[in-house]
Image 1 (tube, helix red, strand yellow):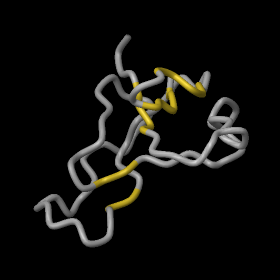
Image 2: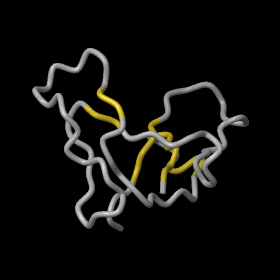
Image 3: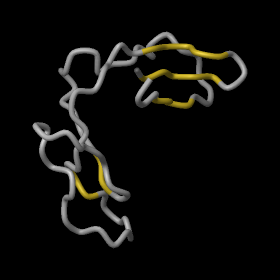
Image 4: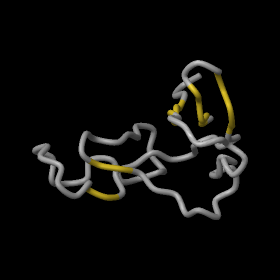
Length: 85
């Protein structure tokens, strides 16, 4: 799950998103890492991942993909994720 965290106040907003596939979708522009080819590209295999310099992406309409922030006060927030809980 993803959380928006205020460092001094703890968790402020949460998402219920649970990943179902983690793959190299897009190469990050301006990244200088040597990987130019996708290594992880198939959701139907046991080994999935994201290489340095790559990103995964979900459509904004994917259920659970949102983190409600409309009522948050201006400030510094951190988006955190938990993997393999």
